[in-house]
Length: 81
Image 1: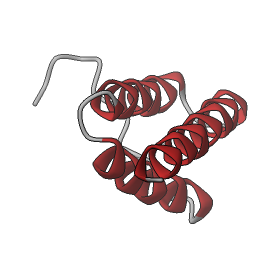
Image 2: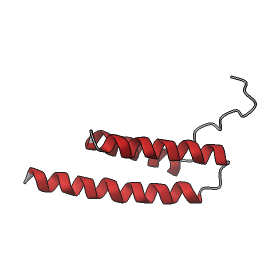
Image 3: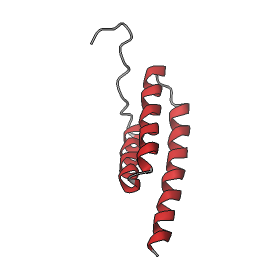
Image 4: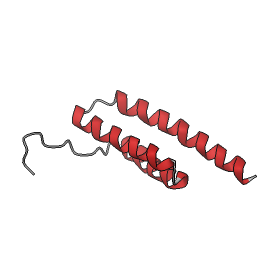
């Protein structure tokens, strides 16, 4: 029974990650912001291997931020802190 719920959570997270990648790819934001979001998604994907429920929470927070228009700052490219 527990194994079935774990498999269902994997499916849910996988579907949400796929949706998140599509959303990030289609956002009208500077490339630096898109790259930062892609790195966040990769980190969430990697963490799902060790902490699936934590990855699901992080993914939910990221998706909420995207839905509400909160994006990471674009990194400076001129070398200043």
